[in-house]
Image (cartoon, rainbow, N blue to C red):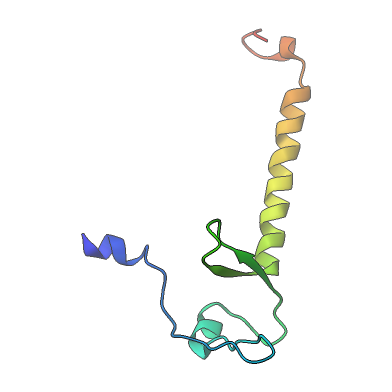
Length: 91
C-alpha cells in the first residue's frame, strides 16, 4: 500500500535560501537527477493556488507544445472531413 504512495510523493532535495539578488542554488542531487546543466533554461511558474514555485525545463515545454500542435492539426483535419465520407454515413 505505502509502496504505491511512495512514487507519487515528490522527492525532497533539501532547502535553499534566496540571496539578496533573488537567486537560489539548485541542490546538486536535483541537478543530477533532472539533468540540469549550467546553461539549461528553466521556466518558472506559480502553482494554481499561488503557494508554490515550479521550475520546468524549457525543452520539455517545447515538446509539449509540439505534441499539442500535432494533436490540434489532427483534430482540425477530422473536423474538415465531409460527414458523408464517414463509414456510417452519419453527420
